[in-house]
Length: 96
Ligand SMILES: C[C@H](O)[C@H](O)[C@H]1CNC2=NC(N)=NC(=O)C2=N1
Image (cartoon, rainbow, N blue to C red; front, side, top):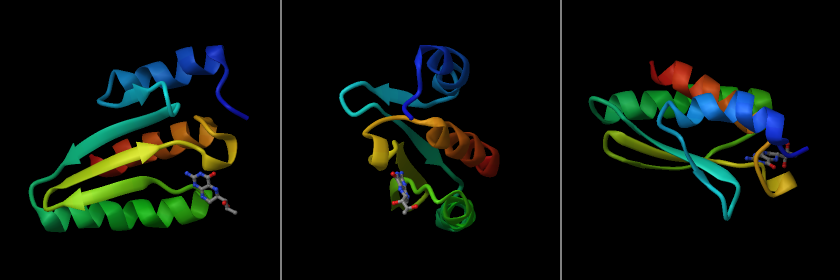
């Protein structure tokens, strides 16, 4: 189920304070993570991949050297769900 208004206020708002931006057209959130170098960026992607498999929820992302550009949305529901919130929180934690 897509996030309702209460969930957006309580769960999404803190992410938007922490570097995530909301694309209203797609109902998706995006963030660019910047690391020291490629190894740190790729390490972050590798750790994220393991959690994404565990959650059965996967990011749209691209990498250029030290940067990882991430977009989260739930394709099965055409918008944001609690799975996106869960993965965003995990990625913020993994990025340190
Ligand atoms: C069967 C499988 O779990 C589903 O197709 C999952 C896989 N990963 C997914 N990831 C994302 N971001 N959205 C989905 O709707 C989605 N669906």
